[in-house]
Length: 405
Image (tube, rainbow, N blue to C red):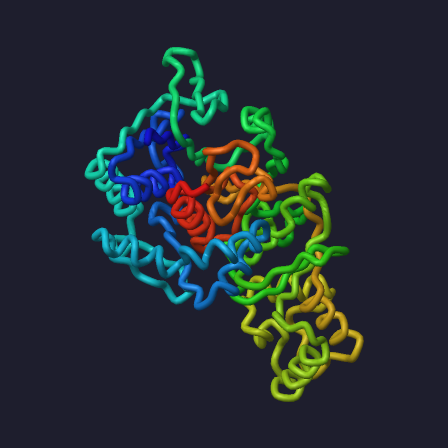
């Protein structure tokens, strides 16, 4: 067989390598439109490459995908996160698992993953062509004909083609696949920080609150976890998770809305009231600023006291019911207006792509075009931070590499 893999990223290399392992006699060629291979792998995880996540179960793993969870539930039965770890470790890439379950190369360098892929591609004699984008596919009987951008390269026939072009910033970037009859879910950004309209909070830039609960007012979108205050708004795992699950809603609302922050990480206001009451009793002679509830930093606590019009030098024993109620409401339901989105460094992720109803998840083959397969972020699958997007790439690439019909 003569196989083409379109896209020289994570899913592309993983698919190409496994195709050669499954079909040693096949000729496999990776076509990459840019001059650089594995660009996203290189920058991911701050240059360390968060390979996967050590979730204990498929159910827990699937919970990290706002889009594609049901499809991945089936796919993970074929190749899950633990299979990923074995795959890399048997290829001289030892891995380590952090306390937050994120899995990285022991070398703490994405070069370990890149070198592994390039080494395997060389060993398996996979052809790699850079600066060579594909603009059109013409289905034949049964071959698939590739048309290249710039027309500098002659048309080529392949028995099977695997599309691994990654996330597309614009729907127009997927027109060539739509023309084949595929339904495209419009791409919109996912995994981004939020810009807020308040200088008072952003003056606290650098403050991290380890446990928060955040919600988009008027929606069911919520997230928990660490929150980082930045000079433009908020970031951190909780915000990135919220942006991922609410990606389409935020896009449809022009990245405007109200962010509600529960600084106490406690939904039951009675518990917060009791906690503040105990501080009143045990610290009645101490100033508010010197006794902080829920391990809040002094800078944030001062900010919240100002929002409640409470003097920092007021004593806990002087607090009345009205003041306590103000504090309870602010700790549990502080709100800020969202004015736009930022980015998450260079790790740009999109939701959207090829509609999963057009793909047989058991094989990753297109239901529209025979012998055409998909893997990676070109599909309408995306996850939160923590190695989940790479895991989706490994799993779909592994299944596509079987080239089953």
